Amino acid sequence: MVGARRAPGDTGEVSGIEVRVLRSLAEFADVHGLFDAVWRPAPEAAPVQVELLAALAHAGNYVAGAYRGGRLVGASVAFFGEPPGVSLHSHITAATEPGVGFALKLHQRTWALERGLSRITWTFDPLVRRNAHFNLGKLAARAEEYLPSFYGVVRDEVNGGDETDRLLAVWPLREPSVIDAVNGEPPAAPVPPGAVTALGERDGRPDRGLVGESTLLVAVPADVEALRRTDPEAARAWRRAVREVLGGLVQDGARITGFHRRSCYVVEPKAGGRS
Image (tube, rainbow, N blue to C red; front, top):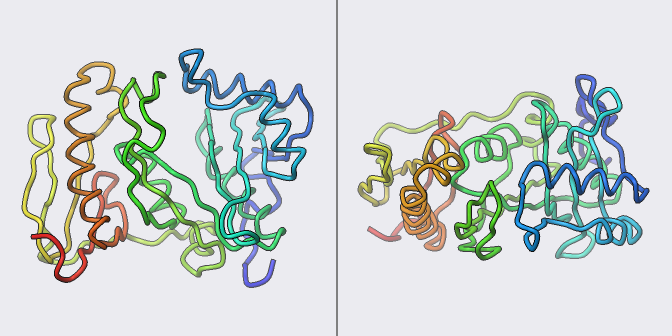
């Protein structure tokens, strides 16, 4: 593990959570059941099948489960990505208890480093506050690309039949900020004086502000998953607004530097970008 300080989770156990690589069909069936319980997809929208898990694991990819007291409480599936020998792409992760997602990421990081990899990538819904805070704050990953409707329309209880916009998270495993984060010292997301709200909230709806060359704040709703059930049109309005504002800024070369107070992205526009 060259260049990486050992973190509390490098043994695969954090606060009574044991994470281990899975190998049997029975274990893969348990993972499939856990994913089904979390997403509750339509039959045609199951995120992964038992047979695919078996094939991925046999080919040397990452299929791991997190256990507390012998009970499966989380799982993660990842496969090797581009460029070869450098990157692992974490396709799907689910956790049913607090702390499980962090334990899985620590284990996945150790697994990747032991195989000579230097980064892990994954996608996440930019509208889900807890995911943005976890990925950009607690893990110190970077959001580097906005991917409109990456998986198309997905019909499950989480995505609610909406388009699946995603941010691509890049986790450089040996960077000092990442090493600090996995050791429980995540970076802050300071907002400099003069920051401007590019997207705020008014009466539960997105409220667009100004976009210039100052540091920008892009808000997301408090609970978009609940909103997709109770007010689908409001949820779609948020998705369109975040796509146009945050997605447009990233496309123009802006850099997302953090997620402030668990409520908004901090964005540094590219000089000479949109106004």
